Every structure is written in structure tokens, then in C-alpha cells.
Length: 83
Length: 193
Image (cartoon, rainbow over all chains, first blue to last red):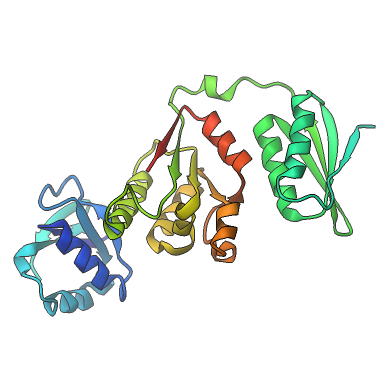
């Protein structure tokens, strides 16, 4: 199974992005996986098929890219990626 | 011929109370007549929780629920080494304070439960908490997974009725105070969110 996880620098950023994404996409809120110690406690998981659309929405969102990190979960591991 | 209790036309908890009295009096075999399916379901649960077997026969729009005491079995709780527990949800999120944060925390809580082997025996929803079972898509999805894993999800029927959302229930069994209190008493600990 392959999917993506976004982690955030602040809980406020996480909740603002959750609010924005959940209107359009099927996302899952989860505690930041233990393997990714980085960031605040809230993370957002989404599926590979939504990658491009979510990328577009996040980039058009007035939020500094330093406020979040993207990880790809593949072959049982999290790997940090950039858009 | 075992005793027959006529509970037709009686509202919500009455048939259960009548059956409970028989059980408390140690009657090994009796039958209850009721006229609606909710009562049948409530009686079935009472039987399951009290060590009785049930046989249900339908006659026109009435139901006859026959209770027969099962041969005594080894106390299940004693044969299990792991502590049993239940989760009580009385609000739409975890704790007081910001509602949106509380809702995110609740989603994370149930997500975490699905990732673990030691799952609760019961998840109980009451008051504003019942709205989680009608509205919160992510939690509903996790509850479906937990339900498949064997967790019993009981939702307060009085509360669904009060908020007028009984028909919007997406997961769980419409339940009553007797079942919910009984669930609390059977487990080793109850955790309130």
C-alpha cells in the first residue's frame, strides 16, 4: 500500500489545511507517525490518486511551504519528498 | 410450560425490565411477547449478556422471545489475562476547549485504536457524542473497522431521539441506559474522552 502523509510545523496550520482539504478530498487525520518525529502531532494522510490535485491546492494556499513536510509511504517506509 | 410475559404495547425499556426481573429471580426458562423489533433486539442483548439463549418466533406483527438459561460456563473474564476496557464518548470531540481541535483529536484517537491489537470491548456514545456516529465521516469509517474487529458500539437511543437524528445513524446499535450501564460494569475500566 502506498500513500502520502503531510506533517505540520504547527497545530493551527494542520487544522487550517484539514479544513480546506476535507471539503474536496478523502483525507484521514492521524497522529504523526512515530517514524516521522518531525512536526506537530497532527498529520494528514491521502492517497496517491489525489497527489496532483492536493499539491495544486496546497501550493495555491496562502501558507509558507516551510510550515509543512510531505512524506511518501512506500515499501513499509516513510520517505520525505518535495512537491 | 414456561411462564409467558405479555409485554406487547409496552414502551422502550419496560419489556427488558420485565425480562430482567425473571432473570434476577433465577427463572431458567420463560418467554416474552413483544410487538416491535427494537424490543426483540434489546431482549436478545439482555439474553446474551445474562447467559441465556433466545429463540424468536414471529406471529403476525407480534414476536415471542423465548429465554432458556445456558449451562453454566467458565467465567469468561477470569480466563482472559488481558484487561478489558470501554470508551465513553459524551461529546463531539476530546475534552473541552476548541471544538475543531477536539474533533481532530477524536479522529486521531480512533485511528490509533484501529492500529492496535488491544481494542476496547465497547465504545459508548451519549449526549452530544451521538453526533459522532451520524456526522463524523472519518470516525464512522474507523468505527466500522473496529466493529469488524469485534468492538460493540452502543449509541444512546434517547439522545438520538432528542436531537432528532435517529435516521442518520451510520454505525452502531441504538441502545439504552440498561445496556450502556451494563457494558460499563462488565469491563475492567471505562475511559471517558
